[in-house]
Length: 348
Image (cartoon, rainbow, N blue to C red; front, side, top):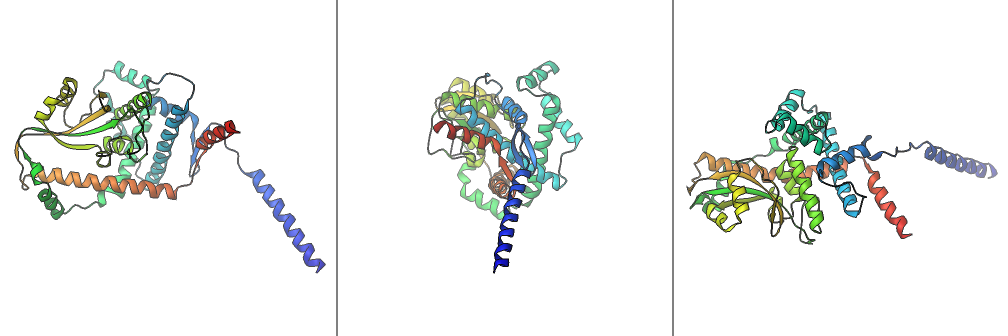
């Protein structure tokens, strides 16, 4: 019996010693690391640069609660992006240099070299930084195309049923504008729902938020995804901000500035930030449609319906894909722990 007790004591002492050893051998996290995604670190410098690029007009002030919230949200985006980038890398879907250069030249095209450099400097970016962001965005799009979009199947019957259910909408009595929008309001609203559950609470936070969205659009991020993530118009954000078709006559009742902006846009082009009574808006012109009845045998009608149905399904599956990818990833958000810890210490 004494032998058994001695053995149990020895086992207990060994277990305690092993626990102490494991704790002492646990690697410490460098002070500049804000998160780790599957052993890949995201640094404070990277977060600061992303914040600067997303809020280029933000003055250098002490971090208040709103700035901390914004940084937490941006870090969540960086974590999501890193998760997707790692998945793209595993599947050998990383964008090649030629594709990155081609997209970079698209960004350069509207500007002189001096103007382009000023745009970069305003966001704290170098050309290499922009190339890195472009490569990341293109790689994630390739991942989504392979994993989601290529698997979305819209049948002819699906197209026909959509047309029959919405036939009146294809009878255009006058020219119309197919428009999408991103809306940010200067007040809290419990009814606002978007993928990030992000809701500006006052005029200042709304201004910062719309500037962040505008900056990310100018960096080439997808309008529909940003609308899903951040737009505060619950009626349209789930469809990527798609408002639908606006008759030309309806613009006559809009403000002169709004009418001028919408009518001056080319298909595929985004507007500048517009201040409206409801809040800040950014519009995207999807297409211009002349007057008349559109029949189902019109290739434009079929293409429009098919694109609408693909986009709806694509956005739904992307949202689900993100959730599954987060579940499967090993993520530690040290910045969130730091923010929460600081708040807890203040209360004590």
